[in-house]
Length: 433
Image 1 (cartoon, rainbow, N blue to C red):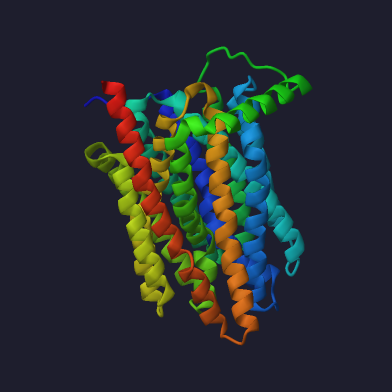
Image 2 (image 1 turned 120 degrees about the vertical axis):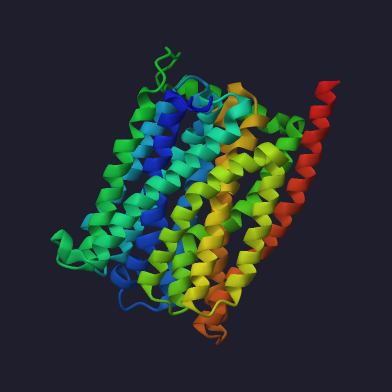
């Protein structure tokens, strides 16, 4: 039986990168770091204060890379190969993931600094990884390649996460002194996993490129190009509306990814139950992402994204009133059904809308928008929690208020995405006439 047309050396190496770097998103960002930060590095601190520290750290990392993303993309489009930037940020993120292994108990300041630098590496690498989709796959195959890569990410990240969880639940079996050492070793394994599976994409394209050295003139030309794009952005109205919609709905998505475990801990749920729920999300997400690739071929990518947004809105409202660990498991399964789909199809939709010769620059804007969204959500939870707690409300009540506030962004994103779809449909009809 022949393989699907979109599966080849380039697309497999593209998917392998997602397989590798998803371990950072799963084991570090969503899984162990929030738990370890609260229980090991911030031991003795108030729960609301540790949540605020984590929220502000995520916000600071997102802000820095958001400010750098467009200019990095513009420089890449001027001649510095995207894979070189991808390698730099991969090594940055993987190295600082490994560095978490060496941070001692109670040293939350150093943990925050290393985590922030590792997150910058993760976010920065995704900028150039996402922009490579334009080179990796032609327009008819981008939805499938994007969802194929995301499904590989769920499987690869989930497999390493499962091993890491097993290490923490039964450390003696692995020759470890206890759960703390197992978690620290997990951070080290993520960095190595990311590097190993992130290398094939560096060798997947043997075409000679017109790479230039990073010189002052190249940076100056990139700024000029970026200024021109800002000035002409009104000519890309569908892209502008899509980015605004994306900013709203992806805010909620990223906030849930980064803060779900911390939220469960604040409600008093057992950390092992929360980690198990994350594992469920990973393995549900593997086939679900592939399903969304199929669904987009039937009803269109934007309609598929809007379905996922509605599910996220329901999840947010459900989480606000959640009381038991069983309900957290149900939430994890539901998120797994849509998380990969909404991210993969958003990436593919944007790739089909932008000028190919400015792919890295435009994906710089795309990632900038996404990271500004990731600033607002965690910061909103942190600020809401601190204000509500200082007003005398219970910690759990304050946290619930923060989670419920992001529902408005799913609503706004869903509405604006409908407007963007009308523009795209109208443009396509004009192009056919």
